[in-house]
Each structure stands twice: as C-alpha cells, then as structure tokens.
Image (cartoon, rainbow, N blue to C red; front, side, top):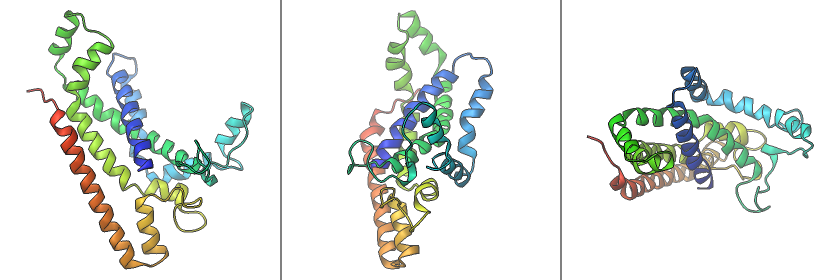
Length: 237
C-alpha cells in the first residue's frame, strides 16, 4: 500500500502537468512527446538494470552527483532505513524504486491525458475565456472536470498495475542476495511476496493462497474505486 500510495498520485500529477504543457503550441512538440513516452516502451528489465547501475553505492552516478555537491554518499538500494524515520516505510531502497517507477510510467499518463485534453471541445474553453475564466480557474472548472473519464481510467489502471508490480522491483530490489524484497524485506511488495513463497521457499499452497488473496484485494480496490469515483465522471456528448 505504501508503494501504491507513493507512486500512483505522483505519476498522475506529473503526467497531467506534462500533458498540459505539451498541449500548448511549443516548438518540437512532437519530439518532446516522443521523449516522454520513450521510457514506457523500453523493457522494464533493461530500465531496472540501468537504474541499478545509477544507484550502485560504489560507482553509481547518483553518488557521483551527491559527491559533486558535497553531500554524503548513500547506499540507495541496499539501505533498509526509512527516509522519514528509521523504522517507518518507505525505506530508501523502496523510495528509490518508487522514483524509477514514477519516471517509467509518467510518459504513459501524459499521453493518455493529452488525448483527453484533445477531446475537450474548444468551444467550451473559448466560452469560458470570454466569460473571464483563465489560468487555474479555467483548469478547475472546465478542464479538470472534463478530464474526469481519463482520470478515472488512469487511476484504476495505475492502481491495479502498482498493486501487481513485479519486474522493476524484483530486478532492482528483489534479486541480489536472497530471493525477494531486499534489503531486509523492505521492498517486498505483494507480487514479490507471492514469488518468494512459490519459487524460493517452495510453499506452493501458501503462494497460491496469497495470489488468490491478492486477486481479491485488487478486485475490492477496483470495486471501491468505481463506487467512489465513477459517479463523478463527466462525459461530454
């Protein structure tokens, strides 16, 4: 739940901001759209390996950047202590993986939000500007309500994806020594828990029950999401 709460809102917020920016008349707008979407079409394993090198405590670029500004080096993916408090999640290892997750998926959110912005009738925004709305007021009363179908879709898809996330987390924080969820189990999200019980501890019945429970949780969250937000969706006919 920490992983979901720490990635989904930021992915959507940054993606919406980028979509609004790319919806403007900018030079090289097509190139920027490609660059933001490029990480999403890259192999997650390849992305995880590259970022694993970036966060390597011995020769990684992250510690090199910290050294350049005079900050102490960090162990990043090997650090089980929390970033807020020593024993409180998320650990620095999980926070690093969450940062990569946000970077990876923000392009997808931006592209989907951009399609939603394109579908908003120009007559509505023009009429709002004539009535004196602009800037944040235009976004709050016109743009964001009319983006509600896109927002609802992305919220549902991103929540389910985060709850069942595996590849990025396993390669960056679950491989290494041991089976899953290093260091000290602080990156062991639900899918890694199931994998550890099935593949590493060969508790097949336990792993099957855990996978079934995870499916029920995903179903319950999806149903709650639909019940809470589907009624607030505004469709433009």
